[in-house]
Length: 194
Image (cartoon, rainbow, N blue to C red):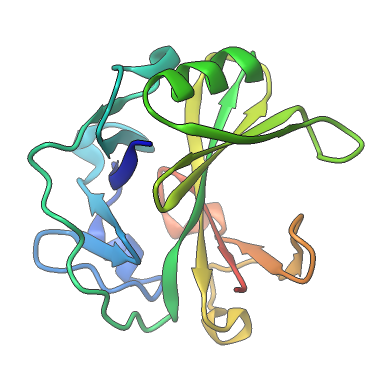
């Protein structure tokens, strides 16, 4: 199975620092075994690349999945003021769950589960790339990375002016809160309890 090493996001490091993350001088946020590289708005919009070790294919169904050959392992995790621990999952929206999940599997991902309503909110598949789960949800439009969810040690302690109210997550026993648009991010971001 291929393993995700880095997400590149077209956000400014200062926007993430304002949310309680601790980017290093190069704009990298270490979250568990994954690096989140904050490349700035000049890089585009949202998630601009998912770098994967052992990549078996390229641009899975149009998604920017790239080889991680030149990427160093994630630096040792350090404390983030918001208590961030790891990226729980990345969300992909697509007009065809099975086609996109199949393309991600062809790139070295491991499809772990598929489901539909009423069990899940939409037709979904869950594809593992090492430490990262890619949640593929069927929705109108071409395949695209939509957002990510980060696990924090204490969701109540992570609350700030840009974090919406906590609510029950799809995963039993967990709570989730969405970062509001006024935070200035180009990607949807949510924080979730362990």
